[in-house]
Length: 597
Image 1 (tube, rainbow, N blue to C red):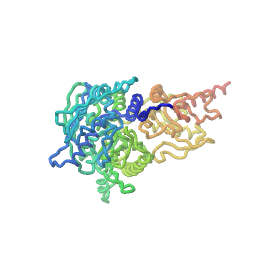
Image 2: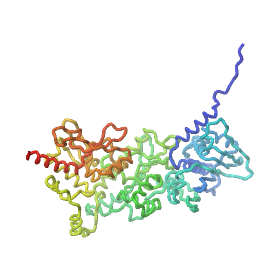
Image 3: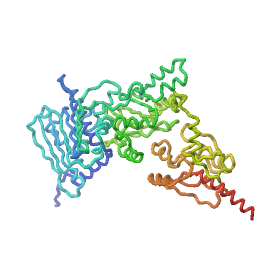
Image 4: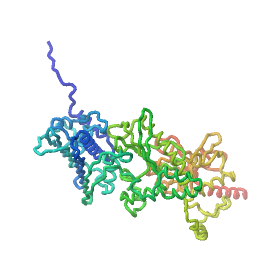
């Protein structure tokens, strides 16, 4: 007779637990996620205390302490707290201390697990009417990265100190980029990427919470402040003469005596905004605030004004700063919030006409029906589609006004243009090579003048020197410069740039996409262009041909270079107009010499 043992086959081993915890970590990828999770829990706890408290004098308080010198974060609240019996179980991975509650956002247990394993000293003091307890876990961050089978232990003590609420302190954390933020950047981050930035107050009254803030920055300077429990809404920050709502503009425009010039004047240099609530199917309410800034340079002006960008920064340092601290500055985009909490999740803008205006546009949706993964990286696809549909309608409403009355540069000072000074500058511009003169009517090099590059291109088509292209139309739907067809090959999309590298800004802003463009026409592909594209992982190859003007056609007529991006099967062809003019001159000279012999 054989013997058998009964085992608990559902009990995971150390390696499985470690792997699962790393999986939770991998689901988070933002610099601010630890702050967002801890502050979300505190705001939820205070909201629940407001609902449950019979004390009419109760006032929610949250204390934030961040020490960049010591890599330390501490968050304290006077919310509902955690009962002594609940605490040990709540700190286990995959536990949740939240029942289904319409006013709260996430799952406390998952967020605490993420926070616990982000530091080497985790301490939580918490309590309610049932008593208080303190729990400490040491070396969790090191344990998570280990490979042995050593257990991770927690010390739990009943506290003699009466605690009403929760204090969580993370010490000896790993280096985080947020510890390098300036004071203004840190406050902005807290008010736009965490639950302290209460979005409910944009559209209606809501509970108030006193938020005490203390931050020791990486220069060891201590900053103390009381933060508003509300979203950092730029519309509340600018003066009355720097903004106008769409409704105000419509009311102004309805006066039959208003000319187009009057309408342009009232919009000039102003942020145009709108707040509203949309009704989706099934009585689903989606709140939004949207605004359109007067120029792309206005983002830099606003960021400098509010201390989110250093003053007098050179271009190279500016680009590095913008790339590193992209999450701690004002910028365009489509963003989301749920139940008063900004998620930090952005959406790619939908396909629209006038796509060049998206860098001027900001939209924040608050949709309490939104659901997202535990790391708050993305929103489910079907819900994205709903918001993108509404974003498209909002964008179209703004651009219908801005493309007519606010898009072009407009000056109320008619006499500022000095004709003599302008022509003095023009005459000082560099001359084209004298060998080019028989092949173009232009005398000057197109110095950062995209319009001249396009004019030179059309000129050579008109002269019959660039062949094989049939042109349809220019600027259709405001996205790309030229639409045409290559003989026997199909349709083409063509862009004009004074300098080839200027296209990278369009790619970065996602105004224009690599796989949608067939050809870029520019002036003089330089080493600076090659260096810029090398940074972007794009190679530039010069096309070698024995006779560009022979009957043998390239994939794209008269192409001089190819841009190739790894993973894309289709390159973008480049027509360098300087090479075209040079080879025309060389070709004519060669023909004259051949005729002599």
